[in-house]
Image 1 (cartoon, helix red, strand yellow):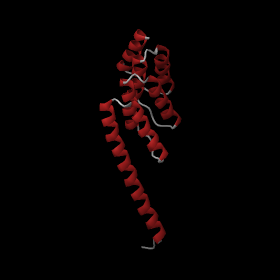
Image 2 (image 1 turned 120 degrees about the vertical axis):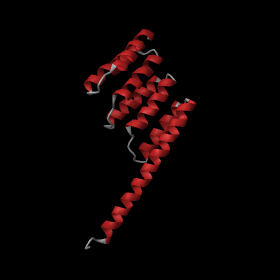
Image 3 (image 1 turned 180 degrees about the vertical axis):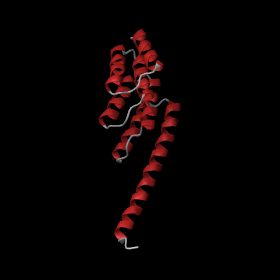
Image 4 (image 1 turned 45 degrees about the horizontal axis):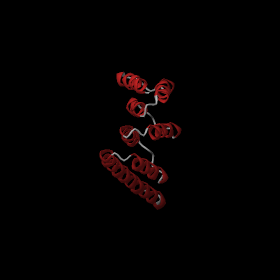
Length: 143
């Protein structure tokens, strides 16, 4: 067909790399589910770091899972750090991941931090819902 062999090989390598990346993301998602059950925040962060070191993008789903794990363990500073890293890495943040981070601040009795994240949702064009208001109010009641 006139296509140089090099282009075909590049295409095949690209497909192989895509399969490897997808496999790693699937494994990471399963691992994060198990870590959530075991309430392992630090290990969740390690999974994210590993994916980033391998040059794989942190997906919204993976970041949400890790932030939720940290929230359940009252590891609010780690949850906020992950949310900031998402912003710095240009990973789109949604209402669910932001609510999880605000909730983790509440569990850590960090009212000021929860309010700051709540305000940032507007600045970052993330829609706030009823849960956003409830977790923020709850955070301020506790802290």
